Length: 104
Image 1 (cartoon, rainbow, N blue to C red):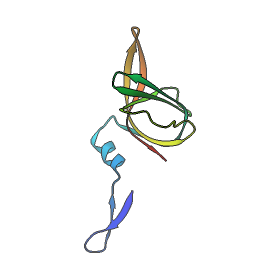
Image 2 (image 1 turned 90 degrees about the horizontal axis):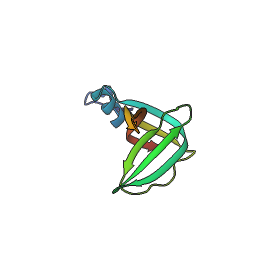
Image 3 (image 1 turned 135 degrees about the vertical axis):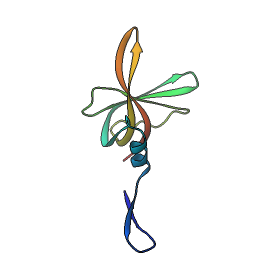
Image 4 (image 1 turned 45 degrees about the vertical axis):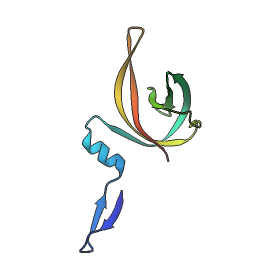
């Protein structure tokens, strides 16, 4: 969060993009400075599906990109995500759909 001053010189806070998203969408969650244990990228049609496993979490975090990206393995990241359920072979699995990711 950044602190700025209004016209009268009083401090006011300006919310970051992540804070604005979290306030607007109720099920949206945020993780800061979590270490990526595993990062896998695979082709799916025109998209590259990225799957992250994070230290201390047993659920995959997934997102799509148009192009392959450098490996995030071992890097700390900030994530904004939704919890979702994905059905594979008739079984439901919990995943986290990443809507915003940044290296921290």
